[in-house]
Image (cartoon, rainbow over all chains, first blue to last red; front, top):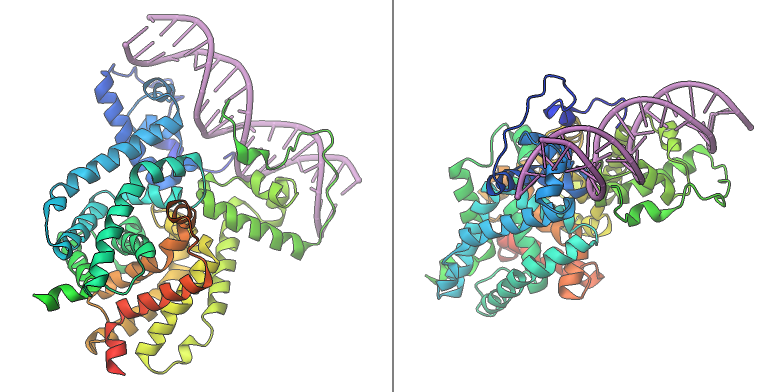
Length: 224
Length: 224
DNA sequence: GTCTATAATTAGATAGAC
DNA sequence: GTCTATCTAATTATAGAC
């Protein structure tokens, strides 16, 4: 990016003669810091657009420290995605115990909305990776997406038979739902510019969740 | 990307001694070729991840030719986005003449679905840009998004009052709709890997469109 | 065991050849 | 008017210092 002003590169001036010596941090701490910084960086710029130098600078570390604590940029990316999906699992804890499939799916939608609002970078990373074939895409699809997809598809099929679910094909449902759930948060910067208000206000998050429950499961309220 | 094999860079071997002289093409033709190549490249890799060298190689041109025909990478991106939105305008021609607001919105949904299936790169580019603030994001929001957003919001408000539309807030509606419409096509490579079938088969496109019409406008069928 | 210096490669843009 | 040779900066990874 020659001769073009790059605000991202100015997060920290690496070449400054006054640059201080870094404090030495232990393995777990710095790994955790790198993962947090990488989440934001990969979410905002995609895998290829993200810079390990910028990620390192965000936590006041040198760029090659990433290659020490993670084998490669690719490995950092996978560790970041694993971490985000483990947070998602935490957020979904207990939903599997709900017996009524309609209520289970409704609660899934609510939790997905809240998680997307709290961690938009997971959906940002996923939408970027799923846009073109790559080894990363195959890995994340088989590792993290397929089990969730199959499980939701099975419940959706049942809810369709019972007339509870909206008339959306079981193959497309997963993407229709994730798109409707996450885009307001994935695109939050645009939403704020456009509407002058934030989609992540707690009341709006809950309103969004209930709106989607009523829209995707129109037979749920009638049934009660 | 040192020492890492990069398949994208091997689209064409620029340094090969056997590299042939390029044919000289006229201004309009080569601009059009660049726009088409840039659409795919920006869609797959985002603005920062896209390489002007790779875009040039796709149409058998040298990288600096892009700086000649467009002032900069940034200008190429804006020209690409302008072109895609002009295609969208073409696809939407005549919808504004439909008098009944319910039918007008239903037809809008159908056209959006077909367009997203045919040109997934527009939504790919948009979702990437709207993820973080930038001059590009502000430009595309004010130039292309705001007028569409305001217009749809007005119709949606009316349909909500009439009880035709699903209970989704008018501020979030635009993103919920675009997410539900486009994600199956934006993420088409993942869908194919996951399901073994393509979401862009004509029957599935129409089924997706009618499913969304029924889901977002549940009062439309009842009214007839 | 952890971090810094540096190498190899690729980036976009300018200047000058045709 | 159009394209090619070249320049400077920014990329990730390795090798060696502490």
